[in-house]
Figure 1 (cartoon, helix red, strand yellow):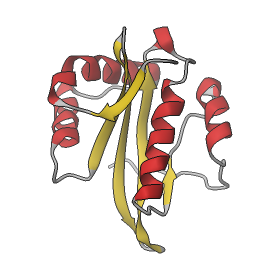
Figure 2 (cartoon, helix red, strand yellow; figure 1 turned 180 degrees about the vertical axis):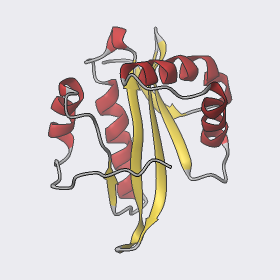
Figure 3 (cartoon, helix red, strand yellow; figure 1 turned 30 degrees about the vertical axis):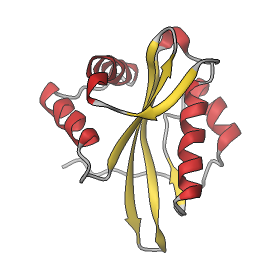
Length: 149
């Protein structure tokens, strides 16, 4: 996709971010209370919280994709590790390179800042996303387990 700018989230992105965030939640048939979404929004803008967001902004369509990620410690390395938690592109422009551009920008930052790894998860049946991810990263042997509290 031409005319695409990858940049950090700013306060004036709220309406577009909120719409994409709600689309992402709906895509996974999940529910997140509005007050939790508000806390998420605030965290992504707070400079002392290691949670971040980048957006893909198209010159004609505005913000069309979001990528939320968290930097954290890892006990097997002295370098930071990045968990790419959320990646979502507006369905109207999906498949035109916004997701790839966001991930590649994160990889570039990780290389510049000497991170150890970037990792993420997706649903087994998310074939569209997995087709992209298979080109950019390696699927691991690890299986995820959750304890809901």
